[in-house]
Length: 200
Image (cartoon, rainbow, N blue to C red; front, side):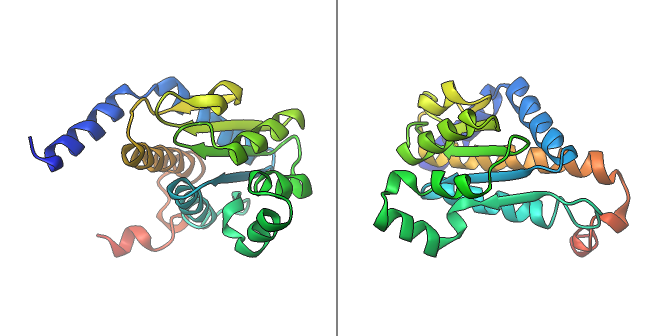
């Protein structure tokens, strides 16, 4: 079997093995936070940080365009100056928890992304958010790790591969985005911006 076939088969298997109830729980967490006017914070390291940034951008524009009330989704690893200052002056384990201390409220949603589920800075932020009464989400792979056990809404990709884990995390975010757009915009093209017209 070629590497191409092997990888595609692994992605297919990971998708088949997803727990649909966990994804439904994530959808409801997004919707409840939106209805309550809460902020959504997301973060991760490396590729997981890129997924966090990608998802935040999708919700700031794609899932919000045309709505009077918009999604307030913030990626904590997008502010490089503050993140590096915290890492340098306090410690790398605190790069996500420190900005949460500035903003977090009980009506907010906190999404930690970690392939292993054991990244110390993600664990520390989820622990803090739990203590403050916010709703917490863990997006993980491999065996789920610590945050899968800690979070109110665990969403586990059961695959022992980092790249596939990252792929599926973006699939999950896109599922949530599509569901939010369907609930909030329906089939009204004027509320979906110009994207649908451009790709026809």
